[in-house]
Image (cartoon, rainbow, N blue to C red):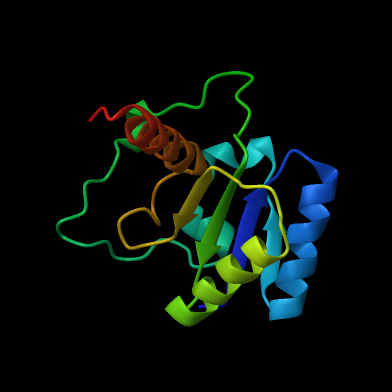
Length: 135
């Protein structure tokens, strides 16, 4: 699995900072488009569909149609990074003073077969839960 960072960043300056950081660390990047919302995460990362954990709580993709006009929120998705590389990325990100991206995910056996829409919406729900203490 190749080290890959997928992103949707709304500010051009921040996007350049993130891309430059990835280059510095030898990480490949993929800029996400709103049209990627309906595509499976594993397809976008180049991993295709893989076997999922038997304990995985898969979202029902048949019922998760992407609404017309949907725009992916600002997010960053890490795929294939070892813990030390992820830690290095996050430390450098902070050190460089890049403004935060609230939605972050690591591709796992639990979410690799979700659509990007499902992943983004789950991240939004988790963020709201953390911010407001709701389940």
